[in-house]
Length: 540
Ligand SMILES: Nc1ncnc2c1ncn2[C@@H]1O[C@H](COP(=O)(O)OP(=O)(O)OP(=O)(O)O)[C@@H](O)[C@H]1O
Ligand SMILES: [Mg+2]
Image (cartoon, rainbow, N blue to C red):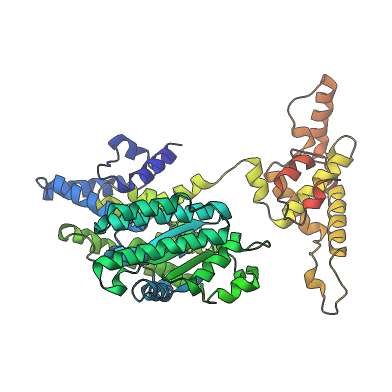
């Protein structure tokens, strides 16, 4: 699709100053507005400021780039806007980091939250702020449970420590050659030996690094280097077998002479249950749960924050755009009838995801040619709708995945009947009987021993009349087609019967009309997720 191609382009541009959407490509974009509008604005800008046209353009380009960077959270730390609902969490993270980097205390903390809940973002943000003033006082080691096995993690720690220590000492320009050499010697064989030995070596290395710089700077506190571990997917290391790595890391927090701070990120709510006793007892028990957006109001306000960069974060010349833009957004978000608010509500009711919203708005901002243009497309939100249309898939597989539970049950029942019958013909009657059997036998498996068990734990068996509706939906999706509707015939007689059937078809009662399946049970088995309660029914 043309617009899809442009959408891609628009994403690529985010950090490219020279980006200009080509004149002819913009015509392909589905922005609909009255010709009047566009012309008027064009006239106005030409008449008013013909001489400064180029300046305005480059100013707008700067603004657009700024906005894009704001959306991607890639502005400088001071200009980055932290959402209101995250402020408490941010404060807590900031406190822990400051205690360990400035006051040289050891800490451990686990952050729990779903994907894209800004765990890594908040940590990175605070680290960027701190690295302004305390760059030489800490080393960050990043590990990820999806990438590192226990052994790879050790190597990873060693490698990251080595490069960062070298960097640190390089910037201070204080270390004499022999010291570096000594460290190299330690580093080369650092990852040999048992895990505990390796950790001892790492600690010794850190200690030596701290004392070496001490000698030069004389002031004790300033030069102790804090080691900060940011450990993504920490739950993958909390397996059933000995959790040696976690044990050693948490042990370091308690016993090492250098300050150590561990940040663990995970999506598992019950992370504490994963930890072995000896690991758990060394963990500080400090767990931060990432806050979630509570209601539509909060969601809308957060979207407004996502769309409006901090005021005065842009140079003077372009501030006018910024304040106009921010005003526009705050008006639109407050107005429940605006297109933007509709999109927000739609997102809240479906994905409830800021990341999805952000992705859908990037093409809109990337394709704005001037401020008026951007404003208009923001008012109409057509490009957001276009983005969502592009995301839709219309293959058979994705249609099956989009079916409701009842529709899926009836479809599977129909496929079963088709497989059982000789000529692969099905009708509504037979399908309903099959469906009824399926539901009854699933319900029979629901334990009924407890007195509390009532009907609400059972799957509802819908009446025949209700299921007719579903039958027609399946027809609409062309999962089932009427017998006469199939085009190619093997023989003239078959064609004759088929056309005859067409003739009779309409007089046959609804329940008995013959249909053919367009998906087989075998195919359904490959598409229906294993977690579905109907999965076992996808074979006879
Ligand atoms: N490099 C990037 N560019 C643009 N947006 C990003 C980038 N990295 C993350 N984001 C966005 O920032 C938001 C927060 O992401 P973050 O990585 O902090 O989530 P997380 O909680 O750490 O998730 P996970 O559990 O997967 O690690 C998301 O909306 C994500 O889309
Ligand atoms: Mg993360």
